[in-house]
Image (cartoon, rainbow, N blue to C red; front, side):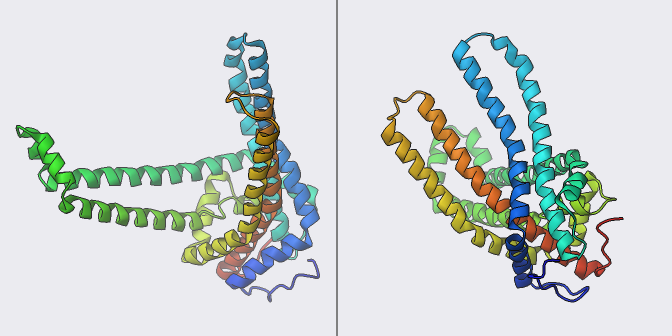
Length: 328
């Protein structure tokens, strides 16, 4: 382990401050190594974007052969999935490297990348399953709002209004009455608070879903979510606080990126006024925006992965002691 990092005693769990401190120290001490891994991982996700731009420019120029899209679009989707898997495997290697430092079993970059790249399709599956969970929760929230609104109308006599001779008058009076708006606003507010609370809690429980897949050799894509769920039991709000502090740390750089993008867009608009149609200036504007955004991502991803590795290390220390083995 790097001499600049002072680890707690064997098996001793970290405090919230120490988790953040450990992530920051790993990030600063291994910045060059982690930045390189993040850079090459980001190149993979840029590839399908570049190909999509190339396809769009080609058809904009020739304005024919649109039948080729039937072949190009499926091929592009396969390319996107493959490159996304390589990107996720590349960023996961940072978490593996960080955990190796924390557990006094460091690996080389090539060793870590070799392990995570062998599981790139599992990362895609894990990401898809986590996304489906959040989509399901969101849909349940919208259904709950619809059911609540319908039930409220039934309570105030909405069903009878449709059978009356003048339902428009009933609904006009109902919408102007506090007896509808007060419970409607309060009910939606309560449902929204419950939804956001559940969303944040669930996000904390699944925040390290891909980390066990990057560390433990006997974990598969469908098992790593259960592993995250088990490790984060009774620690969700503590993890959420760590992630909130991490967000505050990353916020200044994100604001700087937004300012740079805004300045670049204003400069492009001043140099090449837009006529409302897509042009080379529009393409340059989009490319500059993506370039700045991806540069910020390359800088922030290693910090996020380092903190997630520290959270994972801390949870295993608390629940399982430090009987950890990174390599066979």
